[in-house]
Figure (cartoon, rainbow, N blue to C red):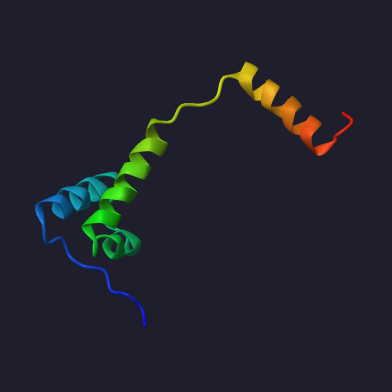
Length: 77
């Protein structure tokens, strides 16, 4: 049995659906399914905001991370 998505019913859901429509041109079905639970929708929105706000890692730190990973896995580069 598949879950059906909901149409916007509350103010928070209408706001999120409006923003989603504005960014994507439509509201995808997975977003409608997440909207069945306000807590799930809110957690998902917060996760997406965090991902959008994340910045790229500086090149110096990327180099250090590559060396540490190579040492951990035993790569004799």
